Image (cartoon, rainbow, N blue to C red; front, top):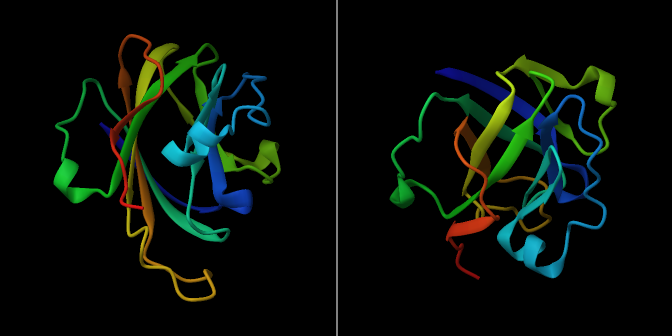
Length: 154
């Protein structure tokens, strides 16, 4: 298991995790459905929606197998597929300078991404402060369509 922690600038209320060589573009992927599930996908790229347009805490776990589903610990959970070819993942805010994005080695292949969200209702009145946090777990698994495992309360 490999666990990494980041503070990412969630400009436009999102950040990305992607294969380093991916040329996928999420500009058309943020449909109404994707906004509702707080997750958009394109080839080699996953966009994670956030509730703040500020720096947000993100934890990334790279695992060998599916972790237990701790649904009670999270307000919102979604899963999708991320295919990697380059053996390098990049994680960054959507307006970050891509060459400066954090990178980590990963075996090429098809991965499940489980995005877990907590503290979504803790924002200050101005939306600048909050206790929201985002946890991504990746493990080798067959491809799936984006799936809401647990929907956040409206």
